[in-house]
Image (cartoon, rainbow, N blue to C red; front, side):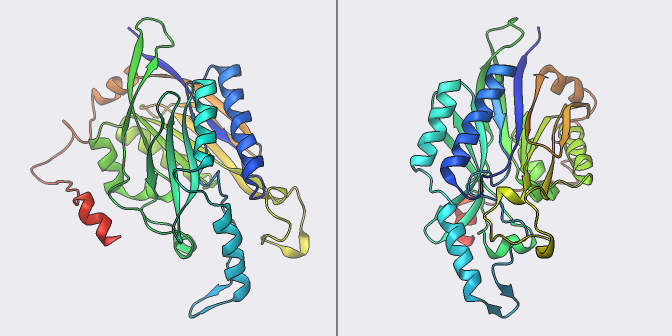
Length: 322
């Protein structure tokens, strides 16, 4: 008896820090995935709402901050969203109208701190959870705060079975953002919680990223859904920093994409998509997870708990430390 759902990843950019235009894109791509492909789950890239400030310096050097950089941060902070907020309500409505479960990368504003966050939106229950990126990468640490152990959800969701052999498919869904995927203990945490659909919102467009996604699918015996932005200079405000200010061109690529869907045995089901916006969709046969775990379950029969052990810091303690 097959247990199949249809899932999509969206490859698209923030619309020049314009929240209304970006929400229109979110609705457009969700509708496309649903109407064209019958998607039940749709994943959007890292920082899709709020924007990924590629090439920005925010006027920073060691030991000094420029006023112009502070002004740039003002603009960026104003482009971020709060949770809850009217923006979350709008995303909930898109999810409900299309009967699609959404995982969306957002820049979250909480008082004066910004976080790189992924939100989980259910078509019936609305906003149900969020994950804040634990460690912003390199320069990102100057603009984003660190997440902690209180936002590491693995959410359960029952989908209608696309094969019609059974009424519903029970799934567990997680989200790990960009270079968090290089944190072995974080991956192990999600595996230990039974993640089956491992979402990876990102802006990493390097060819090497494909190896990382394949490795995680094989290691965790889970489906990996990596949604990357595709962005050009025209997708940023006109005064945004670019790689070569002397050769500005609206068509120059800032983030090249590479979105992909991979099954638990490392088979690429869709993608990678490069150099364009678009939607990738694949059928996920959840029984493939058991086919993979037949010979390797890294938190089960392939673990050596007598030698290695993962311990999780109490989330309340982690919250105080962050």
